[in-house]
Length: 112
Length: 112
Image (tube, rainbow over all chains, first blue to last red; front, side):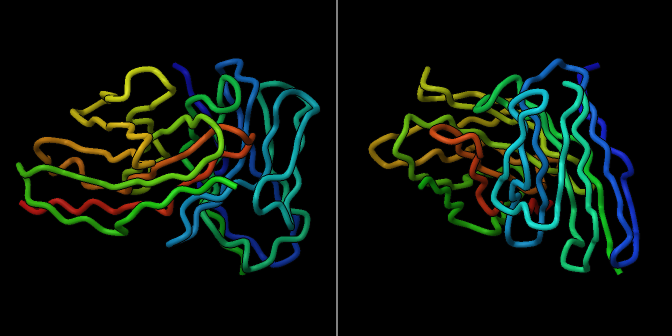
């Protein structure tokens, strides 16, 4: 089954404690991206990757890091989380940019 | 810069009546436009897409949308609402950038 898998689904952490949210896709897609969803703001892109070792900032990259060492994986790293990063996060993959996006189930992060 | 405006943050209909969710866009490039649906505690799922082929696009679950270049609109419609249609709907614009632009979402409420 074609899918994008994120882990964990729920995470509560404390300010400043580094965390990683994993994302994996099994469709051999070139384009992957991370979004955060906040009430009334829709989805905003954090980072995207055009292919292995090629990443770039989206609209709201501050406080986040990503890496793309393998085509299927695109982890999101919060080196020093802060409460304003409390949000619902989605990973997505596309065959290439500007095509249909396949979304993961989401990760609800709470930073206290 | 490109933009997407979903004209209603909430739409309320009765089961069996038509649904209209409105989306206007602005883009300097030939746009690709998408509608996604998000059910509670779920990821986003593609309903339909326009990519410069037929202007009337049919999607899943009886939804369709018409691309009107002169009006820069891509409204989503369904002839008869079902209780299971209650969800959040997002209009998304791609093209001219590696970063898609999301509307802020329209919450569809369906009354019995």
